Amino acid sequence: MIEREISKVSVMKTENLTIKFGDFTANKDISIKFKAGEIHAVVGENGAGKSTLMKMLYGVYKPTSGKIYLDGCVRDITPSLAINSGICMVFQDFRLIPAFTVLENISLAMAESKEKRSELKKRIIEVSNKYNIPVDPDMYVWEMDLGQRQRVEILKGLMMPTSRMLIFDEPTSVLTQKEAEAFIELLKQLREDKYAIVLITHKLNEVISCADVITVLRRGEITDCMRKEDGFDKKRLIAKMMGEETAEKEVKYSEAHSEFNEEKAETNFSCENLSVIDDYGRKIIKNINLEIKKGEILGVAGISGRGQRELLETIFGIRKSGGGTITLDGKDITNASVAKRLEAGMSLISEDPKRDNVAGGMTIEEHMILGGIEVPQKGLGIDWESVHKTVEASPVVKRLGVPELDRTMATLSGGNIQRAVLARAIIKNPKLLLASYPSRGLDVGTVQMVHETLLEMRGKGESVLLISEDLDELFNISDRIIVIADNRIYGKYNPRETDSMRIGEIMLGGGKNAD
Image 1 (cartoon, rainbow, N blue to C red):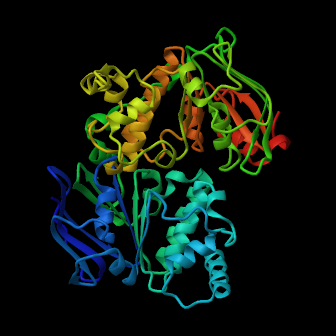
Image 2 (image 1 turned 45 degrees about the vertical axis):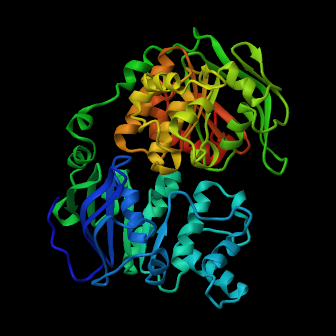
Image 3 (image 1 turned 90 degrees about the horizontal axis):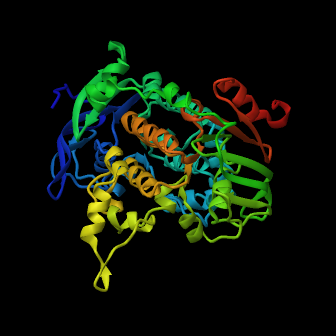
């Protein structure tokens, strides 16, 4: 444990905080302080104990041992005490009711308030304008993309009359690059307004740009603590997060790309005159003609909410198309069911795995069966011993560091859920992987493993349709890039012959800036 002086002016502090789940120690001897007018970033790899620590501060989890001080007094923190004391938390998995409007969700969170709906709506708009958090109070949550939903969660915290400490759990993992930049500016403004800001993240460039203090967690313990005035050392942070070996390792993307020849490669997937419709029956992407070659990673760039989710759902058969044909490995699957598309060699990672791909009470091993691996029989049931051996021996399960197979999905951190979902999607060596934000919410080392895994698939002649709002990611591992803008798809563009500025211009301007 790293010893640090704990200031009496801190809003909240902990001493030797430890929590165990059975024999597993999630946090050990955590002593940390959070002060008003300060951005305190807590970084670490997935499963390092960041979210668990924050849930103790908010009262969701009760620590096994140690103390939590609030305004200098030892307190037994509960969520209601935290809220009444001005401690607000924006969770990774949003606490919103999709069937309610923004106004109704915020009104529900402020149940004890005596404000009339008209007054509350007016104040939502005022706070939204003050902090540049654009939100329509009358919009239903189910209509929103993840970035918009996060704004509602932030507004819920800021609307609380006693709000003074805000805890953000991986807040930029669902944001575009521009939204992330705007969010960092919001944090700086909140700091000026004397909020205590706790930022849980793995994105080091972001925290270095705004944090006053950075605390590093690894395997549930504090391994380092740096202050801005002493200077932040990115290489040291990575080493303390991941270990020296991972910090020195790099994926050699250029070597992988040198093997791809689009003209010689065979077509694996194609769609002709495909139209994508939204939940209202409107055509949001029209007349797509697209080919993906064997051994190709095709990146998809676009501003959030431009039809990326609907495109993948249409290709996978979850969503009915607005016309056109879809072919995989020479077979017409236009009218095939999702089960038939899985059998044909298609696999999907959705943009929100926890919502779309996870049954919380089921184990990781059981989820692998849902992904379509062979299920050997034993008597009238399943030969679980054989299943366990098959999954445990899978190279991708080992590469991605998937947790213990008997753990239920509900007990996993967001990053570990992403690892398990990714492993399930590719354990059968699909012919086509539809990957929506596969590295979202992952730490530096795991992102690297994800990229290596996608490049390995590519090397075996498999295809990947990769949706990401991180242009650096798209340029690093894509063989070609297409852009979704103004209801159309532009490209393909060779990332070795263009740049992110050009792609960004097309994302914003569509046909006006395309070739």
